[in-house]
Length: 282
Image 1: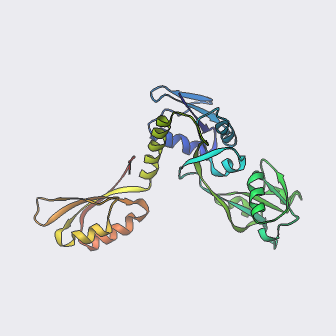
Image 2 (image 1 turned 90 degrees about the horizontal axis):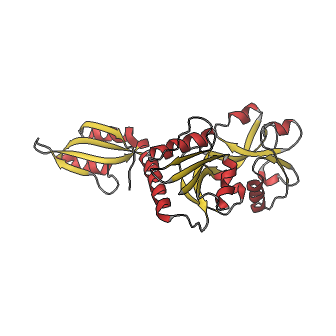
């Protein structure tokens, strides 16, 4: 039986459960269950603190796990990132008081508070900067105000918390993080079962980025319309009963849908419809 760790709380948990459920697995909790067995797919889902998942997977106790890239890297565990999952996105930044002139290049000798000491240590080493790192598990932003640190390093999603604390980010993003599927390097888990799990998830992830667009267009504008909607390999084209008119179907990126519709209208297309895709294999 394949054993997979899922986050037990927060945005990572919500996104992971939604994605895995859409991929056809039974993993939804109705209380505070620590594990759920999906007998139909021969998978056991174990719910753990996101920060602990990397350790369990790297030690071979569990086969796979969904956690944050930032947490996986900070764990320094023996892991392979198998799939980026497109949710719980954030950036990892250094931050200092608004009135401060500090920047990552001038951090030598200062104290930095963070919940990710190994990630920060690795970045400072790349910059040849020596600084004191203090690990804190929460309320990182207030550490400067309390005189514990000169700067902090933390994940940033909206940035509102830092603004409220009178802080500003400095330097570029140290790391772009999101939810990722990880496995132990050189894992001996059932490769076929793992491959099926990954491909199911990938099908949902890709489908979220695309929509299916369908429209009718006259023959004289068909080639131009196909340039606007090239699809993955090529659009599907079929003649209509109306002379010199064709029906076209194609996958397009969801973020481009409005601009593409505008272009199709200019080409005289009719009956333009865009529908969501539940899952796919490309």
